View 1 (tube, rainbow, N blue to C red):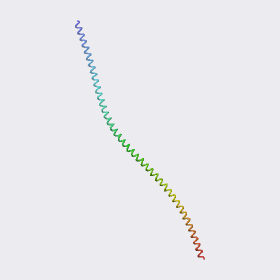
View 2 (spheres, helix red, strand yellow):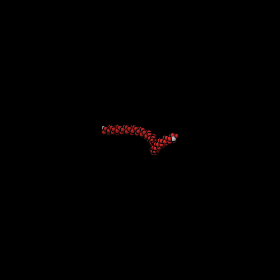
View 3 (cartoon, rainbow, N blue to C red):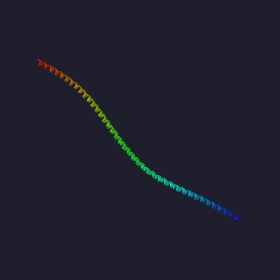
View 4 (cartoon, rainbow, N blue to C red):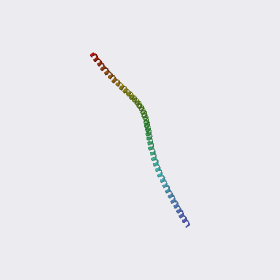
Length: 147
């Protein structure tokens, strides 16, 4: 009976090893399946990230273009502003010159009005003198006629 028990033990050992190998194979297959699924997920992630990277690059190109356009506009606005400031300075200078001319003209006008007033007074005085002389002359004629 020793032989039968030995076969039975060997058979039991064989079955145990076979079960262990099957279990190990099943675990390995599950690991392989998990790794394959993980690889698929990583590929999808890489595809998504690559797509996002391309979109981001396109947006960056558009953004760079906008930045250049805005920088150009800003430069043009600064030039326009500088030109405007220069023009304002020129206009202020012209205004000061015109104000000075106006003040000179006002002073000349006042002087002319003063001279006109003096001349009017002189004319009035001369006319009074003339009237007075005419009256004296008439008086002298009248006296001559009466003589």
